[in-house]
Length: 591
Image (tube, rainbow, N blue to C red; front, side):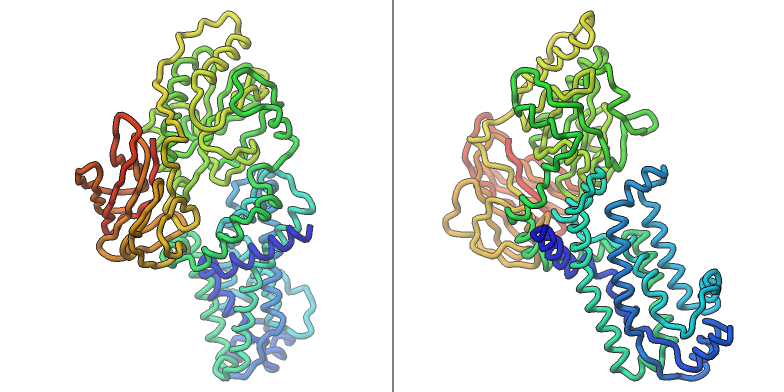
C-alpha cells in the first residue's frame, strides 16, 4: 500500500509540473490573489446589500484589504476531491444514469464560466449567491467560493496520460475500485495538486506584498473572471492541447524514469489487471494449435465510438450468442497489424454467412490514432467492413489483459473464449479453429474453401525490430547524445551498429515524433528486412538514399505509413533520409 501511495504521489508530482498543467495556472494564481472584503464592505453585506454593496465600496475608492488565507487551500482541496470522484466513479455513475460520458466535464465548464462572470459582474454574482442567502454569515469571506471553484476545475482538469493515470482510469472504467485504487488516485491527485498549491500561495504572497494588489481588488476580480472564462472557452475548443504540443515536454526524462520502472509496472500490473471477467484467460496458452476453454469472454467496454454497425450502435457480445466471434485488437499504423488485417478481412468475407462475426477493437499506439476520422479512413483503405470499436482509453484492451498488436481472441457460440493468438502468423491454425467452431455451432453449415491469403509474416529473428523515434518510445538509437524531449543537436557516429538509427543536424524531439528545427535534418538507419516503411505526417518532403538510388517522398496530411524500399529477400542495408521542414517522423517499420 505504501509503495502504491509513493508511486501515485511521484506520478502526480511529475504531472503537476508538466506542460499539461499550464492552462490552469493563471486561474490558480489569481485565485490566490483575491482578498477578504474590507470592513466597510463587510458592514454593507451584513446590512443585507451583499456582493453588490461590496463591489460598490470597492469601486468608489481603493480600500486596502487582506488576502484570504484559506482560499488557496480550499480551491486545491476542491480540485483533489472532484478529480478523485470524477475519475473513479464518474464513468460508472453516468453509465447507470444513462447520461453521456462528457456531461460532468460540460457541467464543470459551465460552473467555471458562471463563476468567472460573477467575478466580473457583481449583480450576477449576487444572483448566484441568492439561493444560498438563507445560510447565516457573520463575516463574509472571499474564501467561500474557493471550494466550488476547485470542484469545477477538478471536473475539467485533464492531466497528461501515463501508467499511473492509466491504472486509475482502467479501474474506474471496469468498476474494480478497491482500497488500493482509491489510495493511488488520492495520492496522484494530491501530488499533481502540490505544484498548483504552490502557485496559488504565490498569488496570495504577491497580494500580501504588493500594495497595488491589495488596493485594486476590483481589478483583480475582473481579471480573474476573464481568465476563468477564457479557460472555459479554450477547453471547449481544446486549445490547451495546442499549447501543450507547442511547448517541449521538459518532464519527459522524469516521466521515462517513472513509466519504465519495473517496480512501477509490477505494482500497477498494467495490462494484467485481473478481475472476475478475465481471470480464466490464463487457461488459454497463447498460440495453441487446438481449441481450449478459457472462460466467458470479457465485456467490450469503455468504447468511445463505433462504426460499421447499423446506426453506429454499440455491439454487445451477449447479443451474438449462437455466433462465432473473432475479436481483433489492432492499431492502424502498426505494420504487424497491417500484415494481419488482410487475413481477418478475408475470413470476414468468407465466413460471415456461415455465422462468423468479426469485431475490430482499435487500441491506439499513438495519440493521433485516437482520431476517429483517421481510424475510419484507414479501415476503409484496408477494406474493413466489419464493426470497429474505438478503445481509446484501452478499457477493453485491459479487460482482456492484452499486451500485443495484433491479438486475436476466438469466442465460440456459447460466449466462451476458445483460442488466443498474439502477434502475426499461424493464420492457417486460426482459420482451422474458426471452421471447427462454425461446424460445432451448426453441423449442417456448408463452409467455403479455406482462404488463400498469402502469409507475409517475416521471421522476426532475421529482421530489425520496429524502431520508434519519439523520446519516450525510442529504440535502437546509436548516437552518443542524450535522447530526451526538447530541441537537440546531433552528429552521425563514425561506427553505427546494425539494427540502429542515428541523427544528424538540429531536431525537436517530442514524446512521439521528431521534427527538424531547421530546413532539413538527417536520420540514418541500418536495417535487415525485405521492406522498410516510415510513419510520417505534416507537409513537406523526405529525400532518401538506399541501394544506390535517391528518391523523394511528398508527405501530406495526418500520420501515414510511407514505403521506402522493397526487395525479394531479407537483406541488410542502410537508408539515409533527409527530412524536410514541416515533416514529423514517428517510426520505421519492417517486413
